[in-house]
Length: 273
Ligand SMILES: O=C(O)CCC(=O)C(=O)O
Image (cartoon, rainbow, N blue to C red):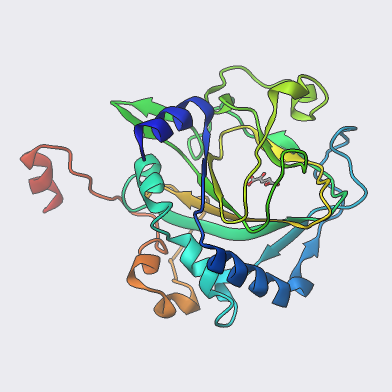
């Protein structure tokens, strides 16, 4: 992560990584989605939560299971989950040994309702909270939203309250419902192939989609090496684990302590036993 990127991420809680995917990767991912378009699950209108400004005539679409699709359709998504264009950012924020927590896709057709603004720094949640300590940023769940379609400035879609990952006071509901202080909410334009990196504790949601073309945003969620949203009992790797490259296998694993060089030989000796 460059100094500019670190500064902006710390202040805003998000960053746009331009051209995270090549045009060929975008085309392959879109072809795979087109092939599985029947699996897109249109939600009931359950995300606007009664907001007059986020309401829309239909729900957004959810699509999952891309990592398990038959070849070649799974390939662009497996490439996305570990990419040289995003790994350095994830290592900076989550530390070495970061883990994949999930990969799914959001679609929105013209008129689809928005999503109320959820999360934010208050209340502090240890699985999501943001901290700056000892010269480093530490994020909880961290997401990479890879765009498979252009998002213009007036199209709607993903939007955030910049800086809210560091909020100390509860956010009033009329702000969460986009009915007050709308001008403080920032919608994030991007090109197909760009990725929006954001920490889950940034207050975020979506504005109703107004463009003629379908919104397609692949949300890839990661945790640091130790945190997890759930796991009781034995960890079993997915059936398709053996098909992955070594780099891809490295992010599919049970939570476990990851030794980081703490600068003293004493720690090294301790980690050796
Ligand atoms: O991109 C969106 O429409 C919303 C995404 C979201 O809320 C999330 O990833 O938690």
